[in-house]
Length: 160
Image (cartoon, rainbow, N blue to C red; front, side):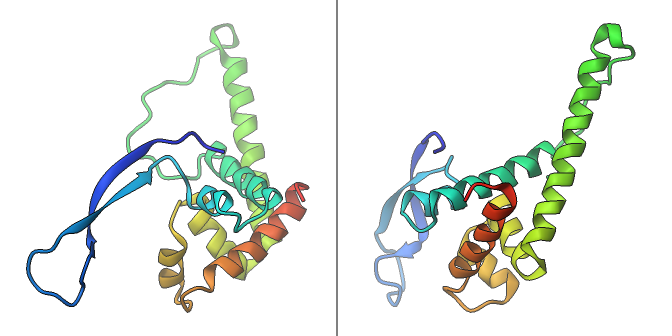
């Protein structure tokens, strides 16, 4: 399980009485900001250990492949020769290519209807409610579809 980092926040949308206008008292909410939506589901027993491990393998492949958008430019230059670390750079490139292939093979194995929820929740770290809205699904359907997708991922990665 991921390391825990708790932050207490005032949440402006969490009003005590939503029908009441004007200033209201808001709840203090403690949030583990290091926890992914998948880890949140696993901590509450909503996904099995095999499903959690398969989802984490997909997320790891996604990150190793460098498929996430970068915020800034990379300033590190490639080493000019093998004597200055060129072999390590080639190994890193091969690892990135392998992760890229595994990620796309896993997404293809999951299937077109289930890959969308996998990418949104596991790779992008979007909550299930937000993913349901973005995909135009009825509320409370995302968890069921995600568990079906995680079952397929577990078969692909051999974790289940």
